[in-house]
Image (cartoon, rainbow, N blue to C red; front, side, top):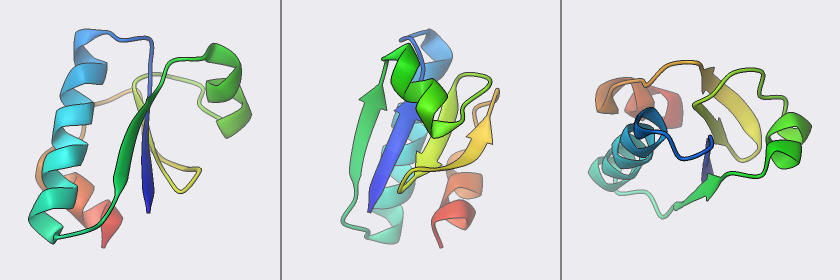
Length: 76
């Protein structure tokens, strides 16, 4: 599983990255959590707002920082 954090590196992007890693760990998932900072790649994935969270290339959240619990729901 690949979890992508889309954003330019703002504090909210950092928090989303931390929450996503924590959610994957708590669920015991083998997931690569990567940061995507290239605007063209974000657009190609369909992100219209940042920060955004994508799972295996599918946008699951945009423009907000979901809690660890909410991300766990998205990953289950």
